[in-house]
Image (cartoon, rainbow, N blue to C red; front, top):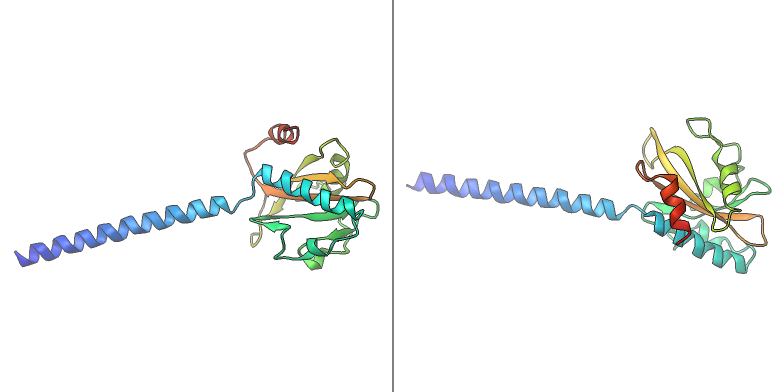
Length: 177
């Protein structure tokens, strides 16, 4: 009888550990999903950044260069690009500030920074699709960047998301809302 009780306790313990493991994996998946910026968040953050930078004609960039600042959230961040010179004016990665990004191409040969400058001129800005590796990965994946011009300046603000499902048409509809 003791042996049977011991076996039963072991089975219960294994079951509890199994359920706890499944819950932990499930919660981790939910946490990871919550760590992904949404298209709406990108539009809202870029719009807010443009509002802040419009007041200074793009000259107040210090906060946009902070890797742990308010302009870095979840898996996205604001970049400020000078479309006249091609120079990145602000980026949370200090190694990219001052670099000319206009000739940068993705794996498909797509020079996407000139496209950001072009779509940013549209009312409400616009989205650009390009292929870029996620942080700490080597293989490029589909990335979508939203850009909006900063009035009365050569600057634009942009941010992006990794998403292989949403269409550019769906993203453009979000701008008008």
